[in-house]
Amino acid sequence: MKIRNGFVSNSSTSSFCIYGALVPHSIPYIRLGIVLKKYFPNKWEELVTRYRSSCNEKIVAASLDIDNPEHFRKKKVRACDHDVDTNKQFCPECGLEMWKTTQDVDEDGMVDFIQDSMYDFEPLKICGDDRGCIGRSYKSASDQETFGEFRRNTELILEEIFGEKVECHHIEQTYYS
Image (cartoon, rainbow, N blue to C red; front, side):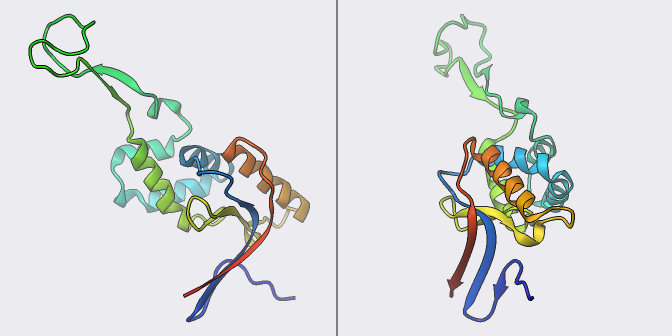
């Protein structure tokens, strides 16, 4: 029996075949990165290394340690250096707000990194945009994994990404150019 794996293209079409789900709501990309690192640590590290040159060093470091919540915790820091009462909202000297909110890593930059890198992430595929589909290609199954285990493992991964049970099924799509 011949099995077609991954994307197959000719001059007018592109198609794929996965076991997964339609995206139930916007993809929580930071949680997606955490789950990918947990289930596919070697692939995740390889991916971060491959994209290292196109990202700033803070995003690369945070990607390697993406499951550390300290990178994304918002902190209040002084925005004004004048020696005045810090209980005020604005500095009477310069008019700036006394406090600003910051975090170690730019969350939007991290989301961009994860979105861009997903096109090369083999075990898990995101097809289309935020409202497309997400799942595992059949060729990502290990030799020791039965089809039932493959389906259960995929369902567990997607449930962890979305924080809720998602209905999974076989998905085939073809795009015409």
